Image 1 (cartoon, rainbow, N blue to C red):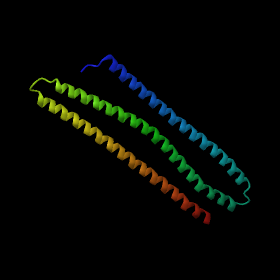
Image 2: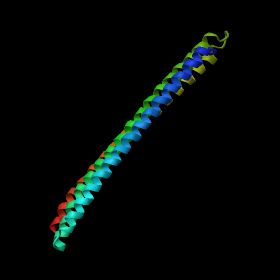
Image 3: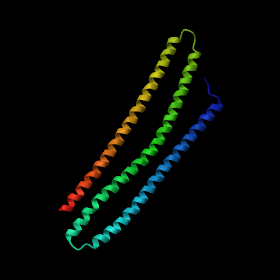
Image 4: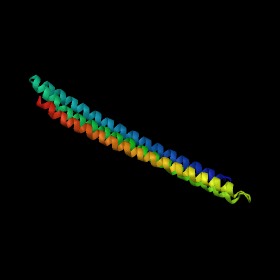
Length: 184
């Protein structure tokens, strides 16, 4: 099976479209990340100014300790929210890359299967067993690839679940620690 110039041009065009699409998605991810960081920086600056004003209005050490203790829970909640948003941006951008990779891999598998089928049709008489071995090898490779994809998806789901659990536990720990700090 030989490729015609039209097929080569069509393949190159499809590859360029994929490249430009992924580049656009990458820039969108960076744009979201910059927006998140600018928003977080503005909020942190405003909170620092408010905290400074509150510290300057403190009259004794007990009031200062109470003020400091009251800042821990909101800080932990904001940090958890920032981390979650950052994770969502990374996961969304990575998901776009994964979709594109899976689509290209599926196209490549189909094209290779077509080449194998074409070779099998044009194989000389008596080579049926060799063709069967080749088809079996291609099927095994496709099955292995699908198994790897499933394993990666499962690992990603486990990692996301662990991240969510860790974030929830950290947030709960700060909620229980903040009231304990106020009692002193």
